[in-house]
Length: 180
Image (cartoon, rainbow, N blue to C red; front, side, top):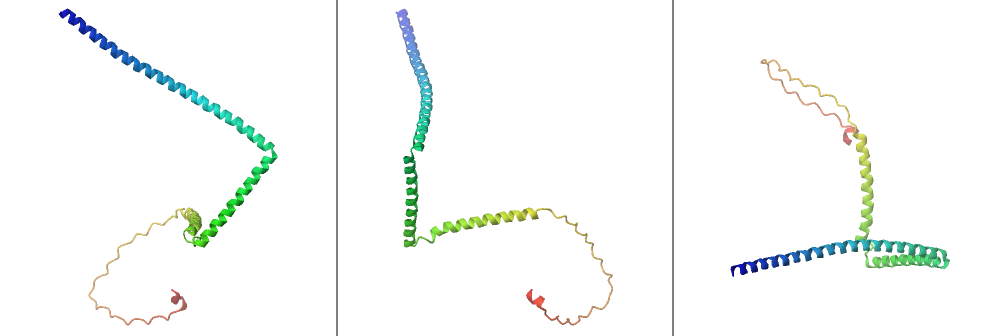
């Protein structure tokens, strides 16, 4: 019986291994099929896109030719452009009138215009400052400062202190000194 049990265990082990290998094989096959399908879809989609672009270019050329050849369509397109421009101008006028009526034509809306003007002024001033910096940027040669010598000590002698003299009268003020 031990021999029969050993044989059954070996068969069970072999069967389990085969089941495992079948699962791994199924996974491998599914993975390969998926990779192939993705590659094929990518290739087909890029071909399809290129084909659509080519067809679009052909149709665009044909439409342009037919529009340019047909004077009536050209006139209609031109008239539509003029009509759209006039409607846009009338709309802007109406919006401006409504803003003015509500008192919105000044304040916040005027700030944008003032800000633009100030931005232009700042740009112009920045350019002038840069030009001035360039002209002043040339280094000026400086003389070395003169060496200071230590003051000589006066001979000490016992003399009488100097008497204070009366202060001198102030000079009369002139027009030059008044301006300063």
